[in-house]
Image (cartoon, rainbow, N blue to C red; front, side):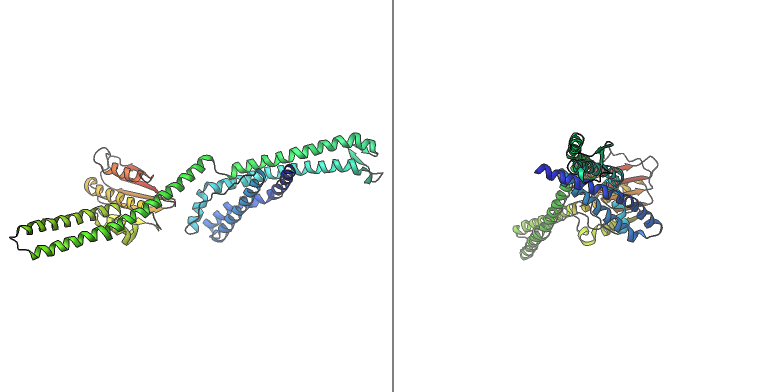
Length: 406
């Protein structure tokens, strides 16, 4: 019974892919056309989303058909689309799943029609040959049924010639149709599914995103507890010690001990503030990454232009690391570059990209000092990269990338 169901599924699958194959041509052509019209005439603002939704719906239906035949799921792995139309266009064009969909549409235009047609021919041949064995007498006497140009006009010929042909047709249909369906389904699965490496990368990306989110929450919790709890208690202790100090006579030996305790509490408060700033600078909470970087540029002794796009929500660990990287880079510019101007540019898509450049003497030596090495360690902790281009005579360009597609 299961084999009968599988054969029925195979027939339905081949019929579906054979009929749907001609639809692949316009869908295959519509995506590049929508991108071109978006760039040239602006009409793609309407056409592009419709085309993307149609292609993804079409390929998702065929993923379900493939899973129906093979007995395994073929889930889509599209990146979530964010931002405006142009951002979505870039995300779609750079998404590997889009190119897999287009490759499948192109292949299915040919293979889908060919496999579907061959499957229908095998099925029709089996039905026709079997029909002749039992119903040859239905045909008019002057137009008898023929097999290999031999007229079937009596029971003897029907048995001798029709029966072997029927058995052959049924065998071809019984074994050939499922084989064709599975072959086409496996080709489609190969094209519509990510590779093992891509799946592993996706898993690692999700794991990293979870770790970054957990780090984000923990970092904010620690900063909040230190600021609202420990720091507040130290302030209270310092104030009470100050009151006690004023109530004591200066000649009283206890007065000097209270003063030392108060100064120690104030020093501890200063050190605690430094720790909080190095964990997650308060300016990031108050002004966001855009405003914090603008403040760094304004404080730099070298005239600095800061350009940032709409960065949206950046994970707190990435935000803090980006802030310290720019701060370290601008400190190096001010101390060592002899530059007269510098620039900071920050953009974001799947990665947060930071470029710090100056017109100084160049020739940065990473083996001297800990600035660049510390920067690399901080960025590497978040799976980011740092590239330094600093030829003798300048300019110096530091490029940093943080993955932040959450």
